[in-house]
Structure formats: structure tokens, C-alpha cells
Length: 411
Image 1 (cartoon, rainbow, N blue to C red):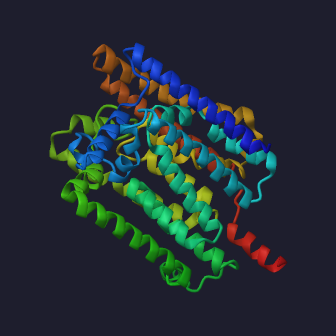
Image 2 (cartoon, rainbow, N blue to C red; image 1 turned 90 degrees about the vertical axis):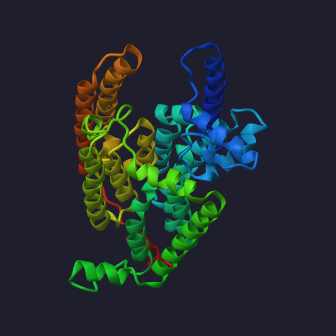
């Protein structure tokens, strides 16, 4: 039995045990193991099963596809969705292993990095509690895998489907296009124009790039068009517009938390909510243009920065970049510094503990600790910046297009 199969089985059994434990805790304890969102998902699935709109369920603000996928949970055991999400966790592990194989990572490092995902406590907890982020992780990792395998159609389709599930993967579009161009056309890194913008425009007019954009765009139009025909403006409002204007003033690690909280009903709060996108957009563009040749590293840095600077930030968002972290660590000197890496991880975790402690005082003790929560958010922000800087400092770049060029010459 190969190591990846063995570890996947162990990871699957561990998740199955936690799902069963969760049902027991839900039955006998006041504090439930199951995520409150899972109840929202399954209620929406019940509406769909009855031929109604999932948006009849208050607070359901996701794609109808998620409710469709969970329809079996209305007739089978309620844990069906948790099993599905846990299965996606394992599939993500396989995709990580496959991508690392393409990158020619050593067998030992492939196993170490894959296990960092399969046995990550946060990953395990989120999926077994019934959160659907693992579905998104599969789609994002698939877009990388298919691109590296030169399967443009599947890569574009996977990315479009990921964007349909959550808006944020749209940030990957530009670096994926630029990386795809270099894999197919530009292994010698020729700049066709001295002007960076003209050079960028030239790269986006090549056949494979146009093919990617066309499939990506048609997929988005088809899926969103179908959902709009079925559910009308409710779909647009709940699945998209809500997230663009969302202001979360309590369960939120964001640096903007306290400003949003004290100005939640004023015009200033609305302005802050909109201006918060500007630093993200600038960072995404800079990272895309300067890091795309190592696509896994580029997407990780993008995601980490996006979540850190986002106007809303909850624990489940961390999975967005944790699913990409193993792809980066495989070519990172931190892998050879286990003590320092552990120190970084513990520091990152403790910054969350500080925030969670003050949030606990608000939620369960009724104490006004919002200023302290904000201080915790500021601490978490700067810890994130430091950790990201260390990952970047220790990174050993891998230019995938050069490896493809070498393969061509060898053949």
C-alpha cells in the first residue's frame, strides 16, 4: 500500500470518528459541535427538495448548487454533508500530492507536505463540523492541477466554478493566465514590449489564453444565468451583493472590525466598507505581476494577503490559504527549520487565542470587550504580516515554465 493511500485512510477514519463524536455532543451538550451554518445548508436543501427556493431559508447566502448537493441529507442521515465535506478534504490531499509530483518534489517532502493538510486540526474540525470550505479548496486546487497538466479547458472550468461558489477566487484569474502563457509560449521569458502593460496585453491575446478566458467566461455566464432564471433577484442579492456590502461587527478577526462596529449605522461605515477593497486590489495586482512564474507560491501569497486585509475575516477563511501552504512549503527553507516553523505556527495560533478569549467574554459573559477584541485583531494582523514575510523570505522559487521547457528539449 502506497504511503498516500495509507495516510488518506487514517485521515478519513479520524474524520469519521469526529463526525460520530459530533452527533453525540450535539445530543447531550448545550454547546453543539455542528457548525450553525450546516443547519442553514440542510434547511435550504430541504426547500430545494420540495421544489422551492433555498433563499426561503433566512441567512442562506450561498450558491443554490450547495443546497442541491446536500439534498440527500434531507432523506439520508443528517451527517451526509459532513461526510461529503470530509471526503473533499481527502481529495484536496490527493490533489496536493499530485501537484507536488508535477513539481518534482521528493517523495519524503510530498508526504510531509500532504500530511500537513490531511492532519491539520483546523482542516479536520471545519469539515467535520459541517462547513463547506473544503468544496472550494478542491476546485481551487483542481484549477492549478489542470493548468500544470496543460488541460486548459478543465482548469478554466474549475476556476469558474470556484468563483461561482465564492467570489474571492477571481483574484487567481490573472496569475493563472500569465502562468499558462509562459507554460505554452514563453519559456525563454521574452518581453515583447518594453512597456509592462503592452507586454501584459500581448500575453493575453495568445490562443490558449483566449481559450481559457472564453471557457471561464462562458461557464460563469451559463451557471449564473441558470441560477438567475430559477431564483431571480434573490439569487443575485444573497449570493453576491450581500457579500460585497457585508459588515460583520462581532465574530471578526479583521483589522477594520472596530471601525465598522462604531460606525455600523453611519455613512462613514459604508465608506470604510468600500475603501477596504482598495489595498486588496493593489496587493493582488502587484503579487500577480511579480510572482506568477511560481503559480503555487503566487496564489498562496495572494490568498494570505487577501484574507489578512479583508474587511471580514473568520476562522474558516484560513482554510483558503492553508490548502495552498503545503504547495509552498515543499520549496521553502522553513521545511528544514522545524523548530522555527513550529514557533511561527504557534505564534499565529496564539494571536487567534487572544482574540477568541475577548470574543468569549462578549458572547458568553456579556462584558463589553470590543476595544480589546480590536486590539486582538490588530495583533493578529501584524502576526500575519510577519508570518507571511518569513514564508516569502525563506522561499525558493520554482519557475514551472522552465521545467516544461526542459522537458521539451529532453524529448
